[in-house]
Length: 541
Image 1 (tube, rainbow, N blue to C red):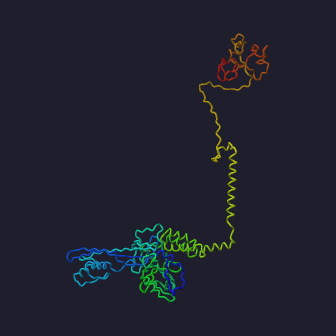
Image 2: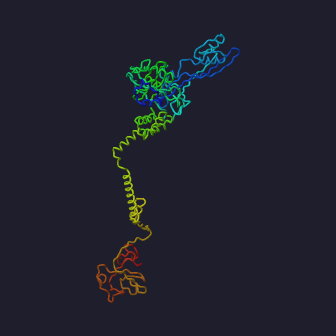
Image 3: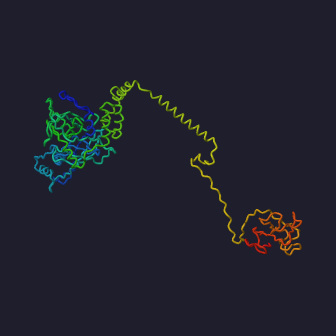
């Protein structure tokens, strides 16, 4: 940022860097009228002569007020009350007919009546006998305050023009893309200071921004009272400088429409108007009204937020902290001139005696007697972590060496207990519907004797059978048992054992009944029954 030197008479103290919030948003505005004109020469034979001219109609300073690139300036910077079609008519007539006509916006007369008649018919407005047809368009270009400088600038169009030449005009960019962050903006104040001698600064460009042509900043003071119809005037409270003359000269050099910045918060309170030996300021109220009518309200963007944080660190002397903050601003908007300049200064002063952060760190170290070194705590923490890790490893290896509990099998890898397999319940064989139902009855009687092959059968029909004895066949088992309640040595039904009875004896007392049992189910057989009463098995089988 370049600040114009202040005369000794104005050397009273002003805050340093108060314009930093505004100067990144200050731009150069140039308006040019392009005229395409055709001359019809009917002197000897009809000839069409076509020319195109670019006519400068205004230049000055503007201020970006929102990240989209909306610019506020004065109406006379982008519009003119002069008729550029008259200028084009003078140029084309002089060039074609080889006569002397000034290149200006005035209507002239020629000594030759015939040529003069053709010249007057060339001037607007167009008529059926006109000898010229002109088409006029206006091109507005904005040159932002960036480095390296933008030689082409970007096109803009008028969104709202004022009723008078010193009324605010609002411009919006045409087809310009500055990335997602947009452009730096200037903050607008809520009102104009009304105190007599309120300090302000004016900023602007005397030409297109370049490395050798930075913005110009000049200090001034406002008179008391409202702006009025003609605008707020300037006056040095000490009476040592003629501020209207000084600022009027800056208006003529290119600061027309430049922002007027109040001295406390660094906000825009108006626009600079005037020229010659006179300079005034139109207030911020007129600016906000014009922006509202143009539907381009003032607002701040992400570049401004990052830049304000960096400026806070820079102007408070924390240069080490300001370096990354300004680098962040340049990441968002690489051409930011003020951020780049302050970054260079911050890098040079970082870590020096001028760095407030370095001085505070040194003061804290001195106050703490050098402080407690940090390395013992770090070493102790490392030993503790190593001990915990070694203990965990030992426990893991000890547990891995033991046989796992069968009830916990499968839990080492997955951590989920595996249930024991279910006990198989034997299935009962299907019931054979064709088989004879048989009731199995357990007996605790002594083993039954078996008749050996070749022994004489006993029973009815046998040669040695006693009457009523059991009937058996060769090799068939005979179930012969005593009654459970009969004493040993007694015959069935209370009779005595037959003489000569012993091991292997088969005879019994005549007339004694022998109890028979079913050979299929083991139940008692009734006397003289041919079939078992329980299972139906033949008694003689």
